Amino acid sequence: MKKNLKYNVVWLLIAAIAYAFIYVLYVTGVITPFTEYTLITIGINIMLALGLNLIIGFSGQFSLGHAGFMAIGAYSAAIMSVKYPTMGGFFSGILLGIVLSGIVALVVGIPTLRLKGDYLAIATLGISEIIRIIIINMKDITNGPAGIFGIPPMVNWSMVFGFVVIVTLIIVNFIHSGPGRATMAIREDEIAAESMGVNTTKYKVAAFIIGAITASVAGSIYSSYVQTIAPKDFGFMKSIDILIIVVFGGIGSVTGTFISAIVLGILNMFLQDAGALRMIIYALALIIIMIFKPGGLLGTWEFSVKKIFKKKEDKSNASIER
Amino acid sequence: MEVVIQQLVNGLFLGSIYALLALGYTMVYGIIKLINFAHGEIYMLGGFMGYFFINKLSLGFFPALLLSMVGAAVIGVVIEFLAYRPLRKSTRIAALITAIGVSFLLQNGMIYWLGPEKKSFPQAIEFKNYQLGFIQISNIQVLILVISLVLMIALQLIVKKTKMGKAMRAVSVDADAAQLMGINVNRTISFTFALGSALAAAAGMLIGLYYNSIDPMMGVVPGLKSFVAAVLGGIGIIPGAALGGFVIGLLETITIALGFSDYKDAVVYALLIIILLIRPAGILGKNIKEKV
Image (tube, rainbow over all chains, first blue to last red; front, side, top):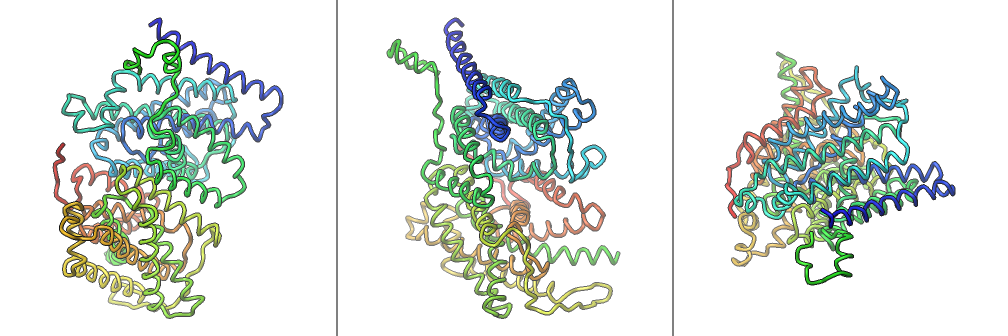
């Protein structure tokens, strides 16, 4: 416990330094409303991509339906905070989104996660499209294809920062826990894991639900920040956008997700006016990365405070690092 | 009653387009286990090639159809060579993501080049309506059905009767063993892509003629739905893909006829999920237990 405390303090320090760094940028006026948009988008994308990376990178299940869960969160928060334009309304919207997306992920996950590989991808894609079509057709509540506008803005950058830290904590802790190890065993070889007594469906569903919930939270924050949402924002393309972040960084690397969300966010800022050209560059990068580094840029590599300490202290005990 | 039969007839035409597309998916999946997400984009390119051949080279419909099928076959082989062949030995997810990348590249390449707006497809064949009893059929619908049936039968003959077809079937069962028997696996896979792409291009041109419009994003939704069709019939099984295509086409028009047109895509995906849960191998497929 004491040993872990040291690392946790270091991580906390890193988070505090990052916060202070952004704060200084704000105070000195480096961050304008335009760059603020990029900053907050990066934060939201980190949350989305971490959830997806948990599903794809750590449990080895290929989901293409992330945008559907994001839509659930976005609409819950939007509807609640339009009705009750207070912080309480917004947070109950987030909570509603968490509950709804958790239930949907559970109901959908138990049967579909029996499917393997590509079939699962198509099933999740179908589910996300179904969610979107239902939102379009529930005109009384969701205002149909026109979407909801005039959502009261509730989030600022510190809140987004806080949420990113919380989501990261939850995901990293899950990965390092017992169930997380079981989940990674499933990724390595599902049949072997099953024959070793791992309840594969349980852990796959658990990872899927956590991923769905983080997507929902990110969606809630997104809707409150952009103040206008429409069903078309949560189509297949959005799922692919998140997938690209995960793949760029490394399928199975939390560090990679952070780095790629930041790099792609900044790249996007400069390519904003390029339109179709931006997507061509994206697509080419995706193909080239996959051909030369099929596991993503960082693979499953993680930045670890522990390793740095280990190198300085003793090398003889390196075999039990985690 | 008349409305229902009319809708069923309409569903048949839509279904034959889905079936043509699904054949390409099913062949590629059967041989290298890859969901070729770029297949819908080949269909889109087929439509655009037809548009150019008819408008710029002022060819008739059938020469343009043949040319765009050949063109699409070449594009399919090039895509396979550049994007999928280097990934033959890596994970399925990597290959799938590459396929998504190729599909994005083709869509946005076309948007960048020609703009995102719809283009009206030239009316190369004059539209005529026939009245068969109470059913209305246009000559274009008949054309669609006849061309797709001819192509499907031709495909079935190629796969069952020719040497290349035999090689395709061998590679799909076991690529390594086929190689040991002296089959050129790479050439067989290229040939599969060529066949599938040619069928997709034909479907793209026919749909262009039918709806009178084409645009760079037209391949996305039919691409997904025809993949659903392929899964529905049992992926890797050629008659299954045709069957699945017709089922999806009919289902969609029935949903529209019942007044739920807003939900037509949702019904297709829901059917997919149900089928996957009840019969993961598809309607005509056999269930194979996986071993370690």
